[in-house]
Length: 64
Image (cartoon, rainbow, N blue to C red; front, side, top):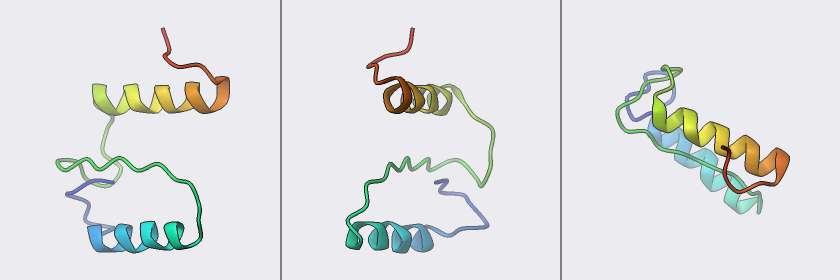
């Protein structure tokens, strides 16, 4: 979620998060205050995406 997103305001994202929690669904959320909707991936975001896929698809702790 980007804090500068012009398509999805933070309140809508939080409503969605609330609905997921009420439905007892697991989810991951990264809030990026200085990013917009669909912005390019910086080093932090690229690393987090890689780690997410490795941990959820390969069941390994850290990609090398």
